Amino acid sequence: MPETSPSVTRRRRGRVTGLAVTGTVLTLAAPATVGQASAAPADPVSVLKFTAKERKDALAYWTPARIKAVGKSVDLGPTGPKAKPWRGTTLKTVGRLFFVNAGGADTWCTATAVKSANKSAVMTAAHCVRRGSSPFNTNLDMVFVPAYHKGKQPYGAFAVRSAATPRTWETDSTNDMATLVVDANKKNGKKLTDAVGGQTVAFNRPVGDTISAFGYSATRPQLGEELLRCKGKAKKKQDGAQAIPCDMTGGSSGGPWLADFNATTGKGVLVSVNSALDSMTPTEMQGEVFKGTAKKVYDRAQNS
Image (cartoon, rainbow, N blue to C red):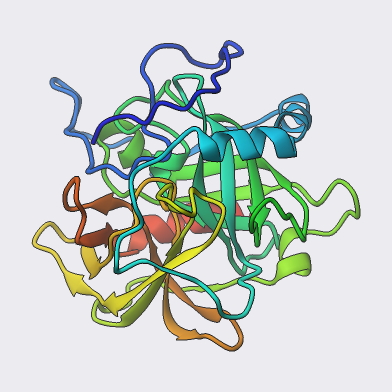
């Protein structure tokens, strides 16, 4: 898919240079780099860490004005008929994940607070953290805002302290999922899930559940300001991924796939995240089937 062209860009602070990451655009996984070694490193998890100063700077960077501007900077066309604005109970666990991508552009994904040992874990897509097949092209100024809605931040903003992804995403663009660890809220000291709760995560669950997928799609009229939902039965793809009928697009990347979703409580079981679309005019959303590697990523984050 083509890159979006956000109007607000920022010069990188020395972490990486060069190629842009797709940020708000959901993409099919890129092919492996030619000549890449096939042997996986001993550690299947790659962890990106942010310093205390970087986290402080990230919170200062994402002002309400900047958040408003980034939403207006991307218009991916009209919202499709399958994606409906969520009008049920507030999903406290789901929010917008703001960051500056590897090309220096302001952008966002969707992410979800999940149950974890450290009460600070957030799940999203790996392509919301780093560019696939490119170890050096990583995102920065990452901030998670749970329950974001039309500029409101009812639980505040949480700076991302670290981001764990499968090593295979870093090396050959496979297994598009990530688990972040966020700081406590700077204003009240509350840890994330103490403030908003957390969704249960399931691994090695058979494909075939009825799924509610959520995301802050950059389609109009919402332009990332409202949460959208697609609902449908998951089907297994030939490449091992799973798919549901859905036409959300960029900005919904990383949004949760919730099985056993209860619209009254806003709780379900997270079995995947929004990862890729089938076409430029999407009819289905694809997500990974969480298996052993995803569990290792989640455990590394929740125990850090």
